[in-house]
Length: 363
Ligand SMILES: Cc1cc2nc3c(=O)[nH]c(=O)nc-3n(C[C@H](O)[C@H](O)[C@H](O)COP(=O)(O)OP(=O)(O)OC[C@H]3O[C@@H](n4cnc5c(N)ncnc54)[C@H](O)[C@@H]3O)c2cc1C
Image (cartoon, rainbow, N blue to C red):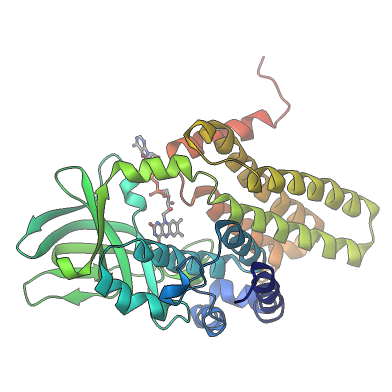
C-alpha cells in the first residue's frame, strides 16, 4: 500500500509538471479543466477519503488536508472542482444505501463516475429547496442556488428540507431532465463568474422532481450542517493556505527576475507568517469549545491569502493586469476562498480581522 508521503510526493510532481503550466487555461477553459480533472482521475486521486474497500484512497484527514492545500497552490479551478467530487465521495461512503455505494464508489477514484454536491443553501434560515415524502420517495420543489461542475459531473447530491426539519440528500442528474411522472429539473446557464469560471456553476430548479428511495443517500436534521460548520470551521482554510503559497511563489519569481532586495524581504516576512498560520491550523484541536479559536484561524488564513495575492500583484507591476497573468488569477481565487463555505460567523470574523489591521483609530 502506498504511504501518505509517497502519495503526496506523487501528487506534487503531477501538479507541478502537468497542471501548473496550464493553470491560466484551466482557469478559463472548461475543456482544459476537464483534461486536468482527467489527469487526477488517471492517477486515482479523485476519491481520497473513500475507504480502500470501496476502491478509494482511504487517506487520513491530515494527508487529505495537505492534498487540498497543495492542489490550491497550483490551480484554484481544479482544486475547487475536485473538492466537490471528493466531498460527494465522503458523503456516499457514510451512506447506508449499499446499492448506491456499490454503483458509485468504486468508479469515483478514477473519475469514471463524477459527482457534485449542493447543500450550501441549508445554511440559510429559509431553504429555497424543499421536499415532501410521497409513495416510494420524495418530491422536490424549489431552487438549488449553487451547483458547481455542470458539464463535468453526471450527477450531484442535492439536499432538500423536509417539513419536520430534517434534510433529505439524494442523487439527481446534473443536466436538464424530464420525468415520466411530470417532474422536471432545469439547469440554468453557467454563471459568468469573476473567478474559476471554467468550473461551470449553475442553479438548478426542481419542479415535483421525484427522488425515489433507491436514490436517497441519507437523511439528517438540518441542524447537522450548522454543527458540522462549527466543528469543521477550519476545513476551507486549507485552500486559502494553498492560495497564499501560490501568491508567494509569484513573489519569489518576481524577486528572481528583478533582484530587488525588498521583494526578497517581503517574501521572507510573508512566508514566515504563512508558516505560523499553517502550523496553527494543522495543529489546531477540533471540538465545540475550540470553535472561537479556530474561527480566528480561518479568518487569518482568508486574510493572509488575499494579502499574499496582493503582494504578488504588487511585485508583478502592470503585467499583473494581463488576463493570463498568474497574479490576478490567484487574487481572484482568494476571493472564492473568502466566501466558500461562508457562514455569518465566518463573515463576521473575516470583517473583524480586516478592521483590526488598518492601524487607524476612529476619533
Ligand atoms: C463559484 C461558487 C461555486 C459554488 N459551488 C457550490 C457547490 O457546488 N455546492 C454547494 O453546496 N455550494 C456551492 N457554493 C456555495 C458556497 O459554499 C457559498 O458561497 C457559501 O455557502 C455562502 O452561501 P451564499 O453565498 O449563498 O450566502 P448566504 O447563504 O446567502 O449567506 C451566508 C451567511 O449569511 C447569512 N445571511 C444571508 N442573508 C441573510 C439575511 N438576509 N439575514 C440574516 N443572515 C443572512 C446566512 O444565514 C449564511 O450564514 C458555491 C459558491 C461559489 C461562489
